[in-house]
Every structure is written in C-alpha cells, then in structure tokens.
Image 1 (spheres, rainbow, N blue to C red):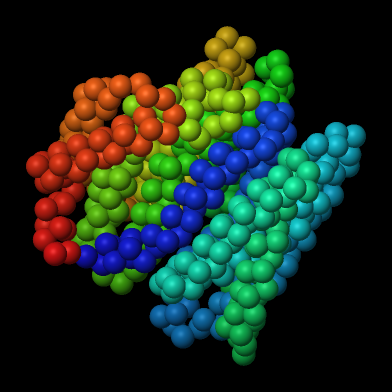
Image 2: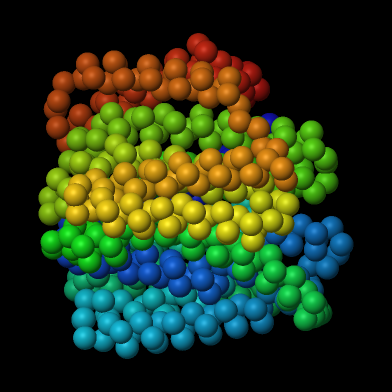
Length: 477
C-alpha cells in the first residue's frame, strides 16, 4: 500500500516529535517552576496565534498550489511567488511582536520571551514553507532530516538553557531559535535555487491570498478552540499561571501522543488524497480518504483509550511534582480532545481544502470558537480546570459535526463505520487486562500496563481483522 510506505518514511519525524514533546513535558516541568512553565505555555500559544494570523496563509497556499505548479512545469514561478509573500508576512508578525513587548514590558517573565519569539517567527516561516514544498513534492528524506534536526536539537538546547543558563520561561524558545535557524539557513538556499528564473505576478499572489487567508482564519479559530482557555484560566482562576502550568502539562502529556499519530497519518495520507482528487477522480479520492480515516482511527483510538487507562502512572512518570496533581485530573479527557482534534484537522477539514472552500470552513469554525469561549466563561468559576476540559471537548464535537455534514456537499469523505466498530471493540479489550496489573506506581506500572494493553489491542485487532490488518501483515511478510 502506498500509504503504508509513506507512513514508514515519515516515522522518524514522528519519533523525533514524540521525544521532543514528551521530553519537553518531562524536563521543563522539573526544571521550571509551575509559574514559569505556565508563562511558557501561554506565550507558546501566543506565538502560535501570531504565526497563524501572519504566516500560515503563505505556507498553506504554497502546499496547495505546488501540485498544479509541478504538473504545469511552473515550480520556479511557484517558489518565486512564495519569497516576497514570506517577507511581507514576516514583517507583519514582527510588528505584532513589537506591540506585545510594549504591552508586557512591565512583566519580566513574559517580556523575556518576546525577543526569542520575534526571532523564531521568520525562522519558522522559512522552514515551514520549505517543509510544505517537500511534503507536497513527496521529498520525504529531505523533509525528515530538516524536521527531525529542528525538533531534537531544539529540545536539547532548550533543556540546556533551562538547566545551565537560567533563562526560565524563555529557555525553550532559545533552543527552537538556534536549531530552527540552522535549518532555515539551509532551506532558504534551497528556496532561492528553486525559484531561479521564476516570475511572479499580482494575479498569482492574489490567488495565494484568496486560498490561504481563509485557511489561516480557520486555523486561528482552531487555536481558539484548543487554547483560548489558557489565558482565560490565567485571568479567572487563583494562581493563574501555575494553573495554566498544570493544564499545559496535562495537555502536553495526554493530547500530544494522539495528535502526533494523527499528524503522522496526515503527513503521509494528505498528499495522496490531494493527488487522487486532482488526478484520479471521485472513486480513487474516496479510497484514499477511507485509508486515511481508517489509519487515523486504528492508531488514534487505542492511544486515547490507553492514556485514559494509565493516567496515574503516566502522570507520575512524565510530569513534575509542582503541576502533577492538577494535570492528573484532566489527562483522560485531554486524550479524547487529541483524537477529536486529529479527526477535525487531519480529516474532516480536507473536504474544504480540496474544494478550495476554505473561507466557508473559517466561517463554520467561528461557531465552536465562540462556544468554547462562552463555555469557559461560565464553567471555569464553577468547575476549575475541568470546566476548561468540558468546554474543549464540547467545542470539538460541535466542530466535527459541522464540518462533516456540510463538507459532504463538496467532497464526500467516507466514515468507515464497520472498521470503527472493530477498532473500538479491540481498544476496549485492553481495559480488563490493564486493570489486572497491580498499582506499582511510576515507570514500572506505566511500562507494564502499556505493554500489556498494546499486546491485547494487537491480538484483538488481528482477531477482528480491524482496518484490514491481516492483509497488511501478509503483504509485509
């Protein structure tokens, strides 16, 4: 299967992402205070918002139009269009950073992160545009090297800065700037070479903006659904930054594994889905979509159920004591949000992107975004951190239902109900087996329960032939 080969090709990136994500929670919740970790989490979300508002539209358009440019022999024109738009978008992001510094100049913990964020935004823009080009062009090896180096070196340098340099909440950003800067130097040379001899035009740039800006708007609303609770927690709960630290630690530990799996599937499956839509017709598009959805469910559901089943030893092993108890209470539900987020971003949104209906997607995402803010406003004072979790889960359910129903009029993305039932049955089979393991605490309990749960899931999935796993194993053998 073509999807299986692409999944294997992108596996190193996802392993690096997992190491950086889990390592970040493990290391930074121990080296930083609860308040400093909360400030880092808040400013990381702010950086993501700035990047999405100012820069993501160029990256999205670069990915979407690269297939047509390659088919028409216009790749040089394509990259020549990307470069001036990147400069314009980056300039806007730096203006926003300057305004932020003025706002936070009297709050040293926040202000210390802003220069690093300002340096990181143009670096990330260059690297992301190049990565989107490599993904669309199925240059898997170059994509893997660039992203793996950036992730692992950035994590290592950030940990060193927190441990030895005393940079506090700015330490993770320091690591990302240095590692990302090295890769940006490499990729800007590639982009310049690829654009040699190319020409851009106002019409082409306008087409990029028309496609990319609605995507950026939709992703901003996605970020509001997934992260607007953090500034609201900081503002509405006692010891706000420390509470954000606990909430972010739970998110990083529980949601990240599931979203990484979904991102891995999207890295491999989205280009194949786009190629089928552009070149092969409705039937092949449905087949490619069904493969993508099936793998998302096959890998995402057991990860979600597994994290919920091992929440306590998982928290004891991964999260520092300052924020552990607060994070432990929300971990099972945060794992659910990871699966919902993955299905929303990596699958149901594809109908709108394939059909160039990104503006409508942005309009639809306003509904769950407003719902999330409203629910947080009413639930946080009553339920504390659990109020933010309830608001997030409800908002994701609203978003998926809206996009799934309305997106079908553009591209009928199938839901593999039979495979979903088999996968759920296999995942639920883990529960009695995991519950029989004694409460040893920490890493021993986590490793034992995770190993037994994974083994039971594999056996049950094979017995039920969930996601056609028997045929896949025969092909591999």
